[in-house]
Image (cartoon, rainbow, N blue to C red):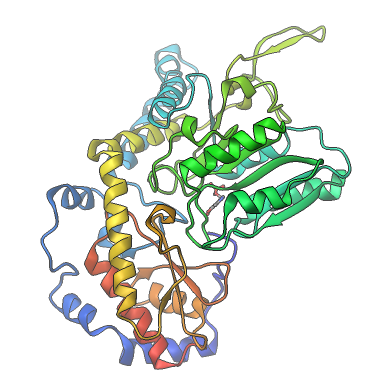
Length: 436
Ligand SMILES: Cc1ncc(COP(=O)(O)O)c(C=O)c1O
C-alpha cells in the first residue's frame, strides 16, 4: 500500500460518517444499478468485455487503484500457479530447472522489444524501488554533489536521496513539477556545476503529469552534454502511457510489472542504455552478476544489464510478468493507451459537471496519463472519502500527497459507468458535509 495511505481502523467519526453515507449519500445511479444486479448499463466493446471477463477484480469492486497495485487477469494467475507447480516437481532437477532457466532471458528480450530498450539493457528486479536504488547508488557521491528530484515524487524516489545526503553529504535540489510548469526551465534553473544526477517520475503518482517524450529527449541532450546521469522513475509508465525508452533518451529507467502491466506483485525491471552499463555501477551484486570469477580475486561482470541481478529469484513470478505483458499485448498497447486517454477525457468532462469538484491532474492532453486526480472542496478530507468509498460501494480510489486531492487510476478495463459512479459518490459524500 502506498505510504500516504492510512490503513488504520475506523475512528468513531469514520463510523458515524460511514453510517450516514450508506444511508443518505450512496449515489442514486449506483444504487439503481446495484439493485438491478449490474453496474453496467452501456454495451461494452467486445475487447473490453473480454478483458473484464478475465479480470476477477471486476466482480469484486470498482477498481481505480491500478496506480497502487494492478489487478492481474486469470491467465496471469494461472501461469504463476502452473510454473510454481512445475518447478517444485524438482527445483534442481535439470528436467525442470532447465526450462525454468529460460524464463528470465525470454522476459528480458520481450521487455526490451516492447519498450524499445537495447537487447542487453534490461535487468529484472522486484519493484520500481529496487531500480531507483540501483540508479541512486551507482555513482561515487562526494560531499556537496547534487541531485535534482521534483516535488511530485513517490517516497521511493526520495528516501534513497535522504540516505545519500546523510551518508555522503549529497545536496538534494527539488524542482516544481506542478501541473503547468516547464520541466526544462525548472531543471535549467536548478543545475549547477555540482549536479550529477536528475531523477524524476515519468508519470507522477501525485498529480498524474507525464513527462512528454520530446521534452525528455531535450532534457537528455542537455544533461548528456554536462555528463549528468538522467534517471526516470517509471512506476506509473508502462501500460499507462506509451514508453519508448530509446526516444525518452534517459540513461536508465525503473519500472514494475505490478501496476499498469497487471503482473505479479513483486516484479520489476530496470532499463539501462547499453553504453552506460559501466557508468551505472553496481553497489549490490552476487552470484549470477558475473560472467567469470576465480577465488584469487578476479571477476568479470556480465556484459549486460543482467549484472544488476543476483541470487535465487522467483521465476514463476517472472513467468507471470511475461504473461501479463503478452496478455495486454493481445489487445494492443496502443489501443490500451487510446482507451485510457478517452476515459480520462470522459472523467475530465464529468468533473466539469460538478459544482464542487475540480481537476488537479493536467488538462492538456499531452501531459495527461491514466492517473486522474480530482480536487475536493476544502471541507472534504480525501483520506476519509477514500475510506468511505472503499467500504460499502467498494470503489477503490487513493488520496495522494496534496491535501484534498483524490486519485482515480483509470485503466482501459474501467468503464464510463464506473467513472460516473465514482465521481457521483465523491460528489455526494462531499455534499453531505460530514467528512471533514
Ligand atoms: C511514481 C512511483 N514510484 C515508485 C513507486 C514504488 O513502486 P514499487 O512498489 O514498484 O517499488 C510507486 C508506487 O506507487 C510510484 O507510484
